Amino acid sequence: RIVVVGSVNADLSARVDALPRPGATVLARSFDVGQGGKGANQAIAAARAGGTVAFVGAVGSDAFAPMLRDALAGAGVDTRELRTERGPSGVAIVTVDSAGENSIVVAAGANSTVTTLTDSDLDLIAAADVLVCQFEIPLPAVTAAARHAARHGTEVIVNPSPVQRLPDDLAAVVDVLVVNEGEERTLREDLGAVPHVVTTLGRSGARARSADGTETRVPAPEVTAVDTTGAGDAFTGAFGVRWAELAGDRDRMQGALEFGCAAGALATTRRGADSAPTRAEIEAM
Ligand code: ADP
Image 1 (cartoon, protein in one colour):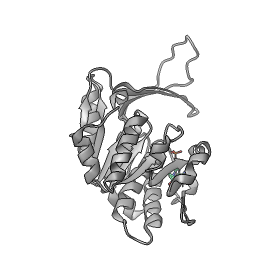
Image 2 (image 1 turned 135 degrees about the horizontal axis):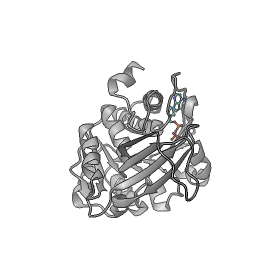
Image 3 (image 1 turned 120 degrees about the vertical axis):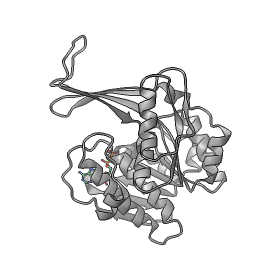
C-alpha cells in the first residue's frame, strides 16, 4: 500500500514553431490539456505498476478539477482524500517549439492549500507501507507527512523536485531519496544523512548509494526514446511499488531499481506526461 502526498496539475501544452518573444502572439500548431503534477503522475505510475495507491492533495473548483479527479480515479487511485478547494486548480502552461525547446509557467493553485493534513490523511499514512512525496506542495505538509510515517513504521520515499534543500526534520526521517543528476549535485550536503540515495541517470539507468556503503547500479533497458517527459515520475512510482513489495528481501534495492528503470524506459517510448506503463509491460521488459 502506497500513499502519495503531493501535487496535481492541469498541463496546458501548446506546440509552436518558435517561442513567443515578450509582447508577441504566436499561433499554436496544436494544443492539448492533460493531467500532470509530480504527485499525481507518481500516484498513477504506481497504480499502473500494480500498487494499491491513495492520493492526498487538492484540486480547485474550476473546470479542470473533474478531469484531474477522473485521471487519478481512472487509473485506480483512491481519491477519497483528494480535496476540492475554492479557486483554481494547479496548472502548468507549457509551450514547446519545433526544436523541442520549451518554456513553462507553473501556477500552484490548489496545491498551495495543502499545508496541513487531516486525521484521515494521517490514518492512511500510518496504515501504508510506503509514503511518496515531492516538493510541489508546501514543505511543512511534506515534513508532517514524513514524520507521521516514520512514527508508524511507514517508509518514506522523497523525490525533492523542484529541488530545494531538505529541512533537517525531514532529512532525519527520509528512507529513500530519489534524485536526478542535477538534484544530486544541488543536494550533495544533505545526502549524507539519508539511508538510501537513488540517482536516476537518464539513458544510463540508475544507481543507489546506501549508508552501509553498498552501491547498486542498474542499466536502463535499450529503447527508442521519443519523449522523456514523465520518465522520472514513472521511475519513482514503479520503484516505490517494488520497494514496498520486496521489504525484507536481500536484493531489494536491485529489484526495485530494475523495476523502476524498466518503467522509466517504457515511459520514454510514449509522448506526454501520461506515459506510465502497466505492470505487465514492466515485467515483460
Ligand atoms: P528526470 O527526467 O527526472 O531527469 P531521468 O532522465 O534520469 O530523470 O530518467 C528517469 C529514468 O527514466 C531513468 O533512470 C531511466 O530508467 C529512464 N530513462 C530516461 N531516459 C531514458 C532513455 N533514453 N533510455 C532508457 N531509459 C531512460
